[in-house]
Image 1 (cartoon, rainbow, N blue to C red):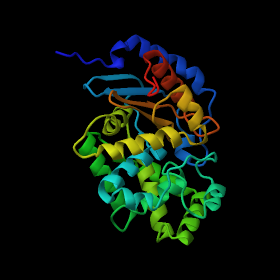
Image 2 (cartoon, rainbow, N blue to C red):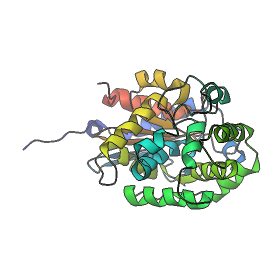
Image 3 (tube, rainbow, N blue to C red):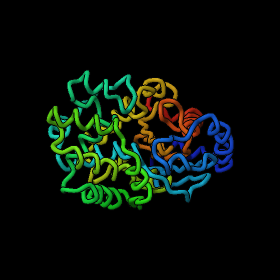
Length: 308
């Protein structure tokens, strides 16, 4: 008999809790985003980490019951769903697969690419993909994705209506300008519908347990997910998921990772499990400062990098 071994078996609860305590120092080095009122009001002290392994184990520490909006962490999940339902050719006719050295909401990048979104992890790419969801309105389209995720992964995501109202309370001129370029280039058919769908998707919410649970869709075989779609999504998370900092953190962390301006982070350890972190203060790139600290501790101590 061959005994399987997961690197997470070496992790102890006191070790995980110690890292969460240390991460609070890093959290104070970041800032809360100010362009969504509810995010600006978040408690900077909140830190949580959740891990789910392919063998069924779970590890959690910190404010594990604190729900948060996924924001841009929904992007790889949207990509995965569309690959499964619409297919490779349809999806990658609307969005590219190349990294960008520009910020996640760069209009200059989109214009330089003549309206073709550089990759699915940028706002331009996600808005273009959001418009491909079935249904006429944002709420209907979002519900389709939410139900699929919860059914396929066993997660319990809900729509955070308060966060959605907060997102809508301030007009996002950059995203609107991005949508206008996408419309003129023929990658979306309607600006308002695409933006409304994108806003709904970003306001799907859960805990670190939910996020780690859904991460297993990308970490292990699943009857509802084709391996080629897992590989493509993981590859794009690794090369593009932390925006212009992706290359640097591929070296430091070495895992497919996606961040969101809520302070959420999702990392995939292919064949082993998924790691979810939450801490709302961000660095200048828009990534969770304390979350990245936690990921570095985990990956370096447990040797989790996909590069060995």
